[in-house]
Structure formats: structure tokens, C-alpha cells
Length: 210
Image 1 (cartoon, helix red, strand yellow):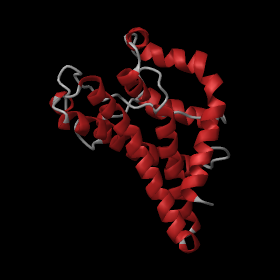
Image 2: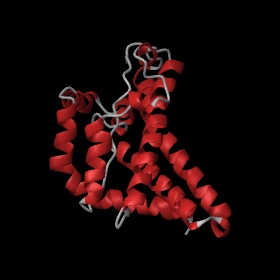
Image 3: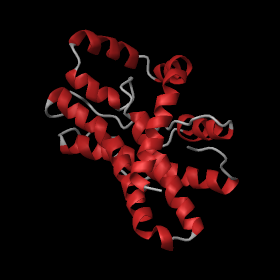
Image 4: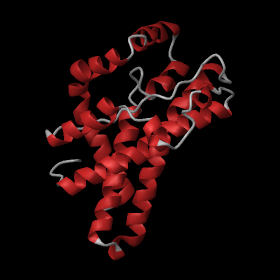
């Protein structure tokens, strides 16, 4: 999906990445605020300022390095904090906070697809390239973050419906913080990368139609 990118393309990926993750993380904060938790607002994370949401290593360096190495990239931003004890509707409210970030990326990808479908024959090649890369980045954000492995957003949805025994294991994984992401990258990602690419490509074809 991100193969054979030029230097300009990589710059477009970077800009698309910053825009997409900023909206993604801000949406987590807005939904949490709507559900009664002001933690994100209190910590200055209820904002569209990208500097508040970027983790240099996992958000910028790691995905760009994977692209340069010809590997499937994944995008991880600095998580927006929230207090589950203050969120309305318990685990279901927490699930809403979790999934609204990826759903926002899906909507951004759909917007890119709509623009391409409507204006395909009138788009300048450079503009088409920008929109298609922006769409690809948002599809990748959506698919990767919906994986139900803590602390990825998809795990919030799983929390809401999983039995207590599964929730207990997930809490243990999440409690080790960034190490859980390392475990996922080293031990699990190689086994799910293929299906992830297939899902991303299918979504791209569905949304863009070309």
C-alpha cells in the first residue's frame, strides 16, 4: 500500500500523518469530555495542536522507517488520557471514546474517496497523489488502531463485551504501557501484517473505486 514512494510522497505521508493523528486524538478527548471526563481538557490535550499529540519515536520515526524499509507501517500517537471512573456508561462509554478516533480516520478516508470518485477525471496528477496518500494513511490508522490489543483503540471495544477473565488479561497487558506495543510489534505483528494489508487494500478499492 505504501510501496515505491518517492521523497515527495514520503513528505505527503508525513503531513497526512500529522493531520490525521491530530484529529484522531482530539476526537478521543472531545468524546471523553462529552461523556463527562475533563482529564484531556485539564491536561491541554483537548486541542488540534499536533505538537500535543505526537510521540516522535512511534508517530514519526517508526512508521517512516518501516516505509523506507519496504515494510507495512503502523501509526501510534501519544494517547489522550481519560479517567474511566468519570466517564458515563462505564465500559460502554470507554468503548465510545476508543472507537471514535479510528472512526474519524475512516470518515477522513471516505472523504478522500468521495473527492476522487467525483473529480477523478478533473484532478491534477499531483493533487490526486496527495489525496490518495491521505486516504491511505487514514485507512491504515483505522485498521491498525481497531486491532483489539491493549492499548490500541480496538481493545476498548473488546473491554465492553469481554468476560472478566479476558478483561483481567487485557488490564495486565495494558499495565506495562509502551512495552505492550513492543511485544505486539516483535511477537504478533508479523502474523497479522498480511491480513491487515489485505483489509487496507480492500477498503482503499471500496472507497476510491479506481
